[in-house]
Length: 281
Image 1 (cartoon, rainbow, N blue to C red):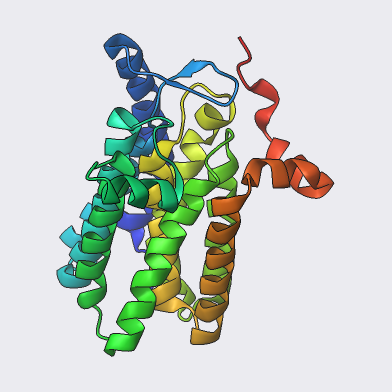
Image 2: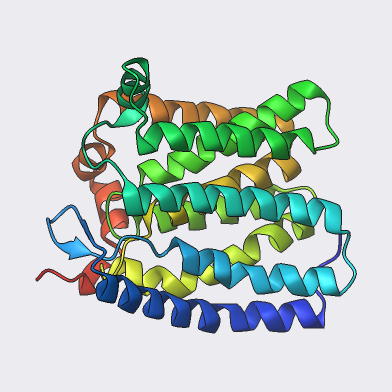
């Protein structure tokens, strides 16, 4: 796989402008529709910037296909990213609030015969992820590893989306490491650069708390990281990444990740980067 040609490069350069414009229009739409969620400060904030991310990277994919790239793997990837974005949007717009949280809460509600938005997310993620993993030209054990990477990465980035900009910073770091370690690097860059460009465009809106990234955005970005790892990282790095995300989920079930971050001076400073314009009133 080669680096992007002129058409893809021009579309990639235009993606941040397009994404930023959509993000601001989305915020206006949420305000007009009366849609808001309470953030960690108790302020009413528009709930989901994720659709701007999806719409921001789709033009790059469309140009690639029009220029003759193999449509089968491209459509499989678009299916995965769109599916994870849409099921996250359900939770952003019709979520259960604090009625159930964590895997234990949602599965516990399921045992009682109640369908929560979180349990619906788990079911949809499993089905969408399994469909994508089944399309990979791997033996079944690697398909299963790819499915676990995608699921844990998607929900793992979502677990960090509790403060402005935090999930985006996790994605920036993860994408940079994936492209650095990937074989081939060009293939990983082709997958992740459109989302990186779109994420940079909406980062100011998320950091200043004009709108939330939301489950739609964080699940989309996490799924992209998991997909990039499964497709392009050596198996040793995939195993380490699986252990990392498993540890994050285990901590998230029993501890507050926000409190753990706030207790560590370095993590607290990194968490606060870029939030100097955060809306406080």
